[in-house]
Image (cartoon, rainbow, N blue to C red; front, side):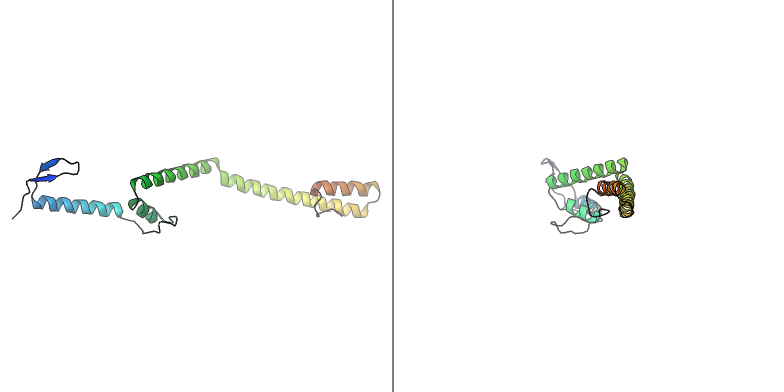
Length: 147
C-alpha cells in the first residue's frame, strides 16, 4: 500500500503535487547514490594542514563553504597555470644547464688562479707581480690563489 501526500514543498520553494512513497524512496536512493559518487575517493584531512593527496582535496572541497570551495578551485587553477608556464619555459632544464655551466666556469677560474699562484712562486720581479695580479683578479681577493 502506498501513501500519497497532497503537496510537497519543492527545493525551489514551489509546491508540487504529491508523489507516492515508492517514488520518494526511489528518488531518495538515487540521491544517496549521487552523494556517494560525489564523495568517492575522499580522504579525511586536518583542515589546518595542507592537502597531500587528491583524496584530501576532495574531502576539503566537500566539507567547505561555497566561498572556500571557489577560492580553493581558483588557487588550484592558478598553481596549475604557473606549473604549466614553468614547464613550457623549461625552467628546470635551464637551471640545471646554468648550474653545470657555473660549476665548470668556477673550476676554470680556480685552475687559472692556482696556475697564477704557481707562477708567482717560480717567477721573479715583474713576472711575479703579473702572476699575483692575475691570481687576485681571478679570485677577487679571496684566499684561493692569492699568496
